[in-house]
Length: 278
Ligand SMILES: Cc1cc2nc3c(=O)[nH]c(=O)nc-3n(C[C@H](O)[C@H](O)[C@H](O)COP(=O)(O)OP(=O)(O)OC[C@H]3O[C@@H](n4cnc5c(N)ncnc54)[C@H](O)[C@@H]3O)c2cc1C
Image (cartoon, rainbow, N blue to C red; front, side, top):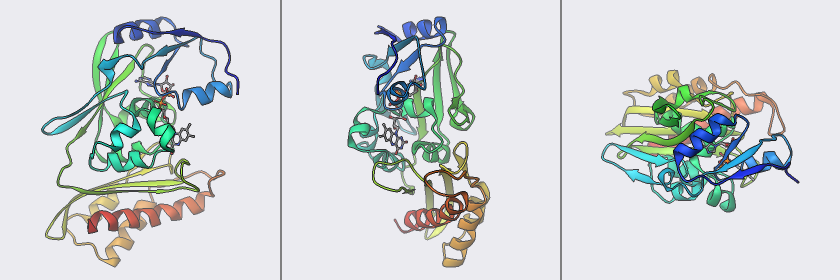
């Protein structure tokens, strides 16, 4: 309940954050605080300083450009769910509860990289890109490479996630299906589907899975089975069985490995059917 003592820094610019974090490797950036503060309260972490990002407007925006959407790291779950973005807004609506959604940020989620977080299933399906700013300047990296492992983003000391870029999937149908024990909980299994159809024939499909591996994965072989086909019961069964093969879950308080694997198939079926019918 009581965090350990720490110093608190209120920077004026991103450059200042980069500099301070690179000089104090155990300092932590503070965004929405809804993963960091709980960890401090349990004393899992003991950073020397917290560096407050909240006042940095350069990290707080959502720009819908012609072919891509640029989302500043400080954009909250609530702002994303209100933005009507294909797939991502639906995923945002399932994150935690209203209070958490008012505070938590997309930059915080992907810097923290909880293996059960909701956005990664969508970000991997959308081929999202992450823009990172460090002391030596900016770089862009595909989200699939940025997410190296659970709780392991590709960030060097001093680096900040600046924005997340997703292609514009207007014209696609989509669905995010989250299995949870109760409203507000993390996912037991989460499946994100994006689909483009022409006269009932699937022309592009992307399936992202979360909570069933160390990091989110795409079920590429299942996607391939669906291409240039119309969805019927047999194909739905075959493709979701194939997607299940991409799940390698661990047993924990949310369920056994066997249960989660089977539920990956069930949730994939539901997400595919939902996206196909929309
Ligand atoms: C009760 C509860 C339920 C939740 N349920 C869910 C859920 O169902 N699904 C889900 O996905 N999440 C859930 N969460 C997590 C929530 O979404 C958090 O908001 C999110 O994981 C972290 O975002 P944040 O902005 O709060 O980051 P913070 O807690 O401020 O930071 C998290 C980590 O990221 C680092 N960081 C933050 N921003 C940046 C940046 N721009 N660049 C570099 N590093 C940065 C911090 O230093 C810290 O290490 C839940 C949280 C709570 C408290």
